[in-house]
Length: 243
Image 1 (cartoon, rainbow, N blue to C red):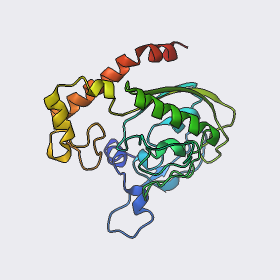
Image 2 (cartoon, rainbow, N blue to C red; image 1 turned 45 degrees about the vertical axis):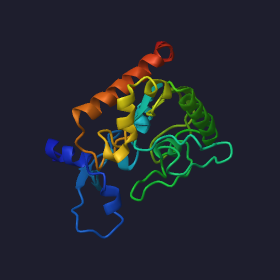
Image 3 (cartoon, rainbow, N blue to C red; image 1 turned 135 degrees about the vertical axis):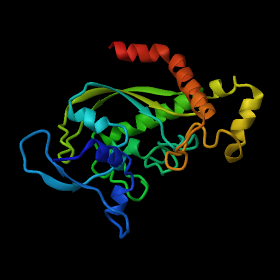
């Protein structure tokens, strides 16, 4: 009969599935009968899990549908490393940038064990350095990281992506904008800087596995930051959406 709503909810949070499939564990793996939505095929029994095991943004799914304009909002646990220089070190470490970004460009990364990013290349590797450099420059400017980029897909038979499809992408990467941060009350800045001993541990890069229950204060501060970034980059965002 296929997945039920209840099992689908469980599957969507089963981040360790990929890891469990390659290691000996006592955990129960989730298997379902899967059909190819693009055509009539026989059902195949597959191990299923959280989509983030493969691609966390939905970019590949949108390209499969031939979308021509994407807004990619990257809220992740990895801050963009301001000391990383893509011109000197074209292959980032896992602490330089969220690993799902370079994977879309076929750039090998130190991805965490259990993630399957090797089939994720949909854009030319040569276009990654320009994106990374622009992100770092935007972070240094202090108004948040919002970067428009026009890209053309490369062939990816595994993911069903055809080469030559042009897409406009607006990349938005969570950061701690200095112009927003400097305007905060001194006591709030001190609370953020207190780190794990304060109210805002890991802000704004909350851990998705260990911080499953955020307080109202944690949520509202992140919402305020993200809204501020949108307004600080309003002209750029409106221009992108209007094209």
